[in-house]
Length: 252
Image (cartoon, rainbow, N blue to C red; front, side):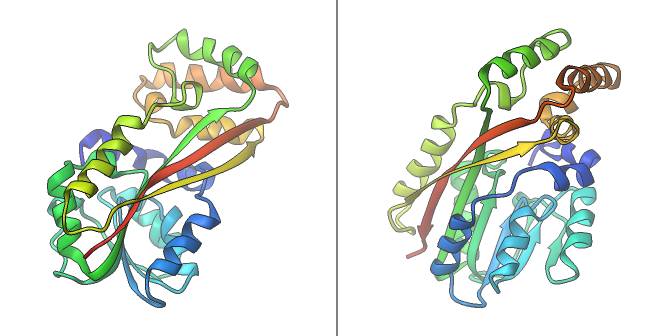
């Protein structure tokens, strides 16, 4: 994982509070595919947003997270129920065939494709499950999004993803092609879920403070953008619509 991918640790507590979770149906699907009480490696676990859902379903989880601040937040929120390894996936040397599942929420794009998939296959048990997915969000009110976008355009040439729903066709398509080409996996099954979250103005500004495009700004520009966002919103709530997209496959 690149250093850019580790920048979220500076807002670990806020990140954990305001970043959206993933649909219940996704975890039910995983729980049906992974044996009851099975072991799961959560790659790029962050503050444990997916980890906690896996634990709730009785699975044993090893959370792999390279950022120390994020890992500490994960431990604080997981009450000692999870084995946390502060390392990145490229350098993790877990025991061969140790896991019934390997999952990666919102992080697979940080890794080298074919070599990363080979590492997954090495870690999975004989019929273990691999799943990787992303949340793709957009502000539901197009007019509000347009008004707020002006604030970012004053200080940055790059809008946060909520203002320009990213096209993950290439990223997700690449994952599908890798799985299809790897004879060690069954044909991949597409993951596709729809959800939405409504944020109060303070929580929406907090959400924006965790976005990579905002974190990349100078501290002066970042404070300016967040202050202007809060003033512009007043008492307005913001609905964000999410697509959760990815693939799941079984080792064979």
